Image (cartoon, rainbow, N blue to C red; front, side, top):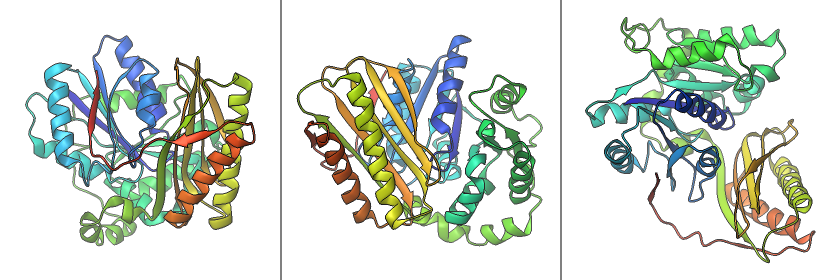
Length: 366
C-alpha cells in the first residue's frame, strides 16, 4: 500500500485534488481509500468525497498530528485488514503540520506500506495574502514539503505563476515544485501523479541534503517550539464546525440555493467586520432532496463559489465549517450560528442545531 499525505493551508484545493486523484486511480483499477481529517466534531470533506463514490474514513474532534495519533494507527490498520487498498490518500486539516503526520506514519512501521513524498498544495491565487495574514504558519508548511504544488493556476494571471514558483522554491530549495489545476487536462497534472507514485530510488526527494536559504534557516530555528504546540494554536486561525437539521422536510431547490447564498453572504460580511482581510476557508453544504448544494470561499476578496452535487436525503441537513484569520473564536461561533438561523428564517424555515456533545470517534464508511 502506498500512503500519500496531501497537505496545505485551508482552501488550498486539497479535497478537489484528492477527488480527482482518487477517481482517476480507481478508473485504472487501483483500490483507493481516503482518510479525511476535519476541525472539530463536524466533518464536511468526507461527505463530499463520498458523494463521488470514493470510500472515506473521517477523523474529527481535532487534528491528526495532535490528538488522534492512536486512532490514525488503528484506522490505517483496519483499512489494510478489511479493505486492502493499493493507495491510501490522507487529507489533513489545513491547519495541521503535514510533516508531523508523515513522521507518525513512518513510526508506525506498518508492513507492506510505502510512504510517498510529502505533498503541500499552495493556493497560488492567494499566495500574497497568505504571506501577509498567516506567514509563519504557511512558511512552515512550505519548508516541510517534498513536493510543492502551485495550485489553482487557472485562477492566476500567467505572469504571476513563475513569480510564485520562484518564491516557494527559494523558501524550500530541496522540494520539487509543480504547477497544478484540477480543472485542466495537461502535462502538469500527470507529472504530479508520477512524482507521488514513483519510488524515490535516487533519494533526491526524501533523503537529499538541504540547500538552506536564509528564510529557511530562520524558520527552522524556531521549529523546536512549533513541534510542541498544537498546530491549531500555532496557525492563529479561529475555527468552528457545526451542523443544523432543517425542520419540515426538503426545501424547493431554488429556495435551497438562495438560502445557502444568503447564509454565506451574512457570514462573510460579519467576519469582515472583525477581520477585513481574512484568509482561511468558509465552506458549507445543504443536503436537500436529490442534490447537495456546496458553497465555499477562501478570502475576503473572493466571490463565493457554488457547486451542485447529485445526492439523496430524506431529512435535509446543513453543515458548515468556518476557519478564518484574525477573529476571536467566540465571536466566530456567535456570528455563524446567528447567520444560519437568520438566513433560513428569512425564507420561513426553522433549523435546529444537531447535538454537538464532545465525542472522539473513528467512523469507517467502507
